[in-house]
Image (cartoon, one colour):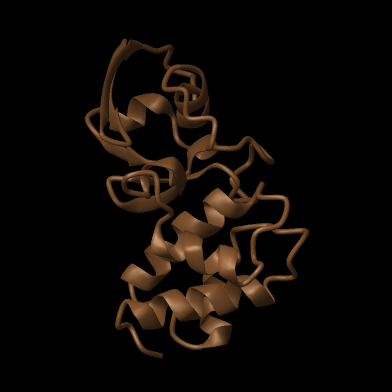
Length: 156
């Protein structure tokens, strides 16, 4: 079938086999290499994208399920070459180390803040449960999400 969708503001119309995951479509057809292949089972968060504004694991979604959708990856967040404010908070607090988990952490945290699921520190930690990070220990990530949430006016 032919799949039509928008990735980071760019329209794609590409043939796709029914078994291809959104992750593989994004990486192979749309060139979105910021979407990482981690576990391939939907538990590590490395492949998180926003599908019509909802955070999903792209390895667990078939590309054909995204027909007509808008997909945003972490590369689509910044404006004019600058970092998104949450990305900036992560950098400033040393919450970005190897970077493999960062796209999933950023997109999942943005959704958590938007939905009001980033209240106190334990709530922020629970909202990060689907994102495996082996470098930071999560403390600095939680600090960054808290700071971003407060900057956006979503006080705890």
